[in-house]
Length: 75
Image (cartoon, rainbow, N blue to C red; front, side, top):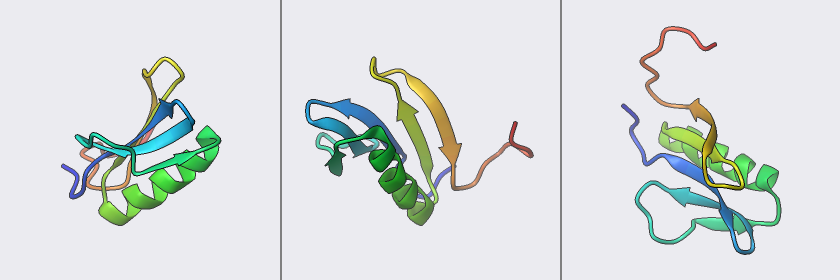
């Protein structure tokens, strides 16, 4: 279980947004997905939570855990 709120990288009308789990508004909006991922990763590491990266259609394409990962190895 993660300590902080999971961070989502989601499509936004102005580019890509970093959004905390359950939040109604984006934490920050970026021009590129890569910039949003970098900020989201920084927040997830700080909060020991997960980073979920969505594609243009809003589907999760990648998930990274920076908290208590129950899996013994990454694959």
